[in-house]
Length: 130
Image (cartoon, rainbow, N blue to C red; front, top):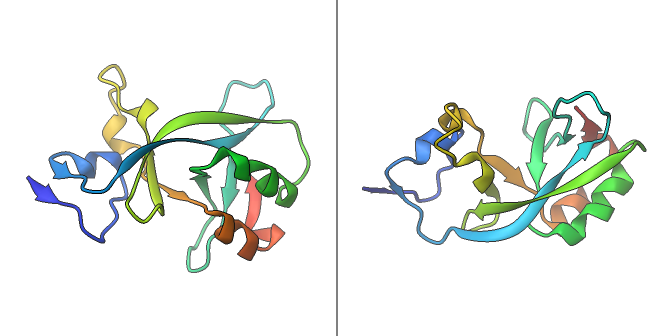
């Protein structure tokens, strides 16, 4: 079994057979636009050095009010999820994706985790809805 050091996988399937030393389970989540259309419309962020906006997690649900201040106003809901978070708290996987009944689980992304400091540093324009 190989160890995962300071490299981040892009997809959940890349973690198969890897020792996750230092990773931990926390109650975190994400913010979704509430729209009644049956599709997933998460809040997105564009981080420095990234080419596009991407979904993100917060490993601390108390941070969501700060994120919501930076997003355009709309109906939304906070979805709390159990997360498997990297040792440096920068990447996470939703444990909801780990299901044998979900055939594409290995293609699910490993997502960025925003800290209180990250949110404070980012301009409002870095956040948008999908």
